[in-house]
Image 1 (cartoon, rainbow, N blue to C red):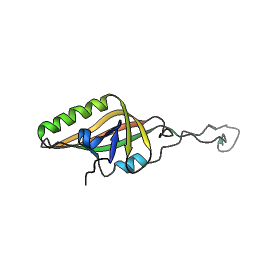
Image 2: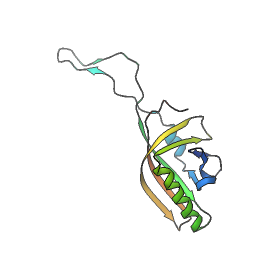
Image 3: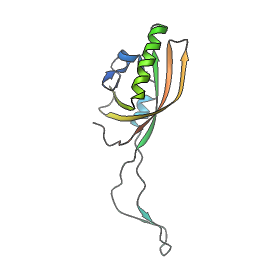
Image 4: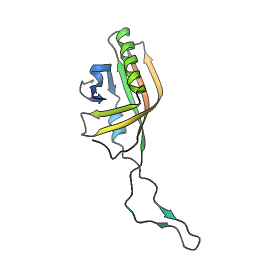
Length: 138
């Protein structure tokens, strides 16, 4: 069921503004934990194994694949929604909030890995996004 208020992109309700809503995997992909940066190590030939510098690990950037659907009541509405949403993506900066978490995801648009459309009334985007600092979720 499509619910207005489920997804906010750059401060706008995505469904109301562009007819955009999350695919079933969307929340899970957003909530997947970010990786850690590589540990500082030293592999001296004079010691067994390796030494790991005992510092608190830091979170690394992460790439997120986000599947979004887009709809329009008519072909014309669909094409307008599509064009307006593409303009948002091409701005580069994408801020995402959902009704399911309190997090604000600050993303950079990288590419659309796939777009498929069915009779001009519904489409599916598979977006590649980058979250430069997963610790910045406010």
